[in-house]
Structure formats: C-alpha cells, structure tokens
Length: 241
Image (cartoon, rainbow, N blue to C red; front, side, top):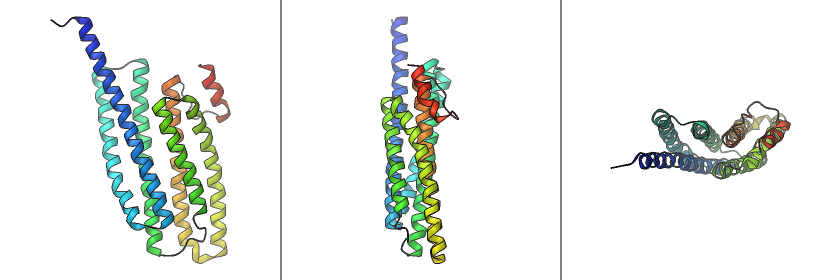
C-alpha cells in the first residue's frame, strides 16, 4: 500500500519534472528565435530572398511552440495550483514565452524587408552599417538574456536591461544617419525606408530582451522592476540580497 509521504513525494517529483520541462521548452524556443534573428540579419545584409523566405516559414514553428507552452502552463496552474516561487516561475514562463514569440515576429519582419530589397535589386547606400551594428548588439542581448534565464543570473539580467537603453540611443543615431542618405539621394528613399523598418524591428527585439530580463529579476527576487527608473534598478536588486 502506498504511504501518504510516498504519494506526496511522488506528486512533488512529478510537479518538479513538469516545471523543469517548461523551462527547457522556453530555452528551446529561445534557441529557435535566436537562429531566426541571425538568419534574418544575414538575409537582409545579403539581400537574399531565399534565406528570408526560410526565416518567415520557420516562424510557424515558433508560433506552435508558443501555443504548446501556454497550454502546458495553463494545465499546471489548473492542476497544481502552485504557490510562492513555483507560481512566480510559471507566471514568468508565460510572459517570457510571449516575448520570445514576438521576437520571432520581429525577425520575420526583418526578413520581409530583405525580400523587398532583393526585389528592388539596388545597392544599399548605407552598406547596412547601422543594421549590422545594431543587429549584432541586439543579438548579443538576446543571447545573454537566454543564458541569464538558464542560470537564473540576476546580475546578467540587470546588465541586459541597462544595455537596452544603449540600443535605443543607437537606434536614434542610426535613423538620423539614414535620413541623411535620403536627403542626399532621393532615389535611395525606398531602399532606406526598408532599412528603417528593419531597424525598428531590431529595436523592438531589444525591448523584448529587456522584458525577459525583468522577468528573470521577478522570478529570482520577487521584485517587479517594470516601468522603474533604470538608475535605481541595481540598488533595488541589491537590497533584496
């Protein structure tokens, strides 16, 4: 006959396994969108419509995984009714899941701009300098925040939030630079507008990476730092240590 303590241990082990499975699925999804972003940037700078189409097609896989993770989180909430830190983990996973799906959407938008540039078949007057720079920065933020989630590293998460403000500044500078190209050569307006739309998607990816970093802080420290002042963020985290 199964004793009560054995039954409780069995249920607890199952629950822990479910939570670990959700974390692993989020990391799997993170890997997919990270590859999407890298391929979209490569397609854009090479104006490769074939590679761009492949990026857009892969977005369906990300969407399906998002729905699967959402369903599993809903099931855990309904069946397990988790409390305290376990509840924070499930809530954080739900929100991270949403941000990762939106990163996939933005990567697809970058790929669509690559297709439009390929169809126009005209050289970029900017030589994609701004795209390459901000693209590399945003890709680094995404990689770092996924690593921070895997290790539950609050310090790295704080660093990602701070670095997103740098991306915002770089985005403004890049827009001014691209507008100069348009004023100097009206024939370049159409192509430059495609680059501007791609840059906007990259800036939004940086925002989503920052959102994920905020969820890591919430998960580990129970501290909601959304809409908080950036200069107070590190101090707030340290007070809870």
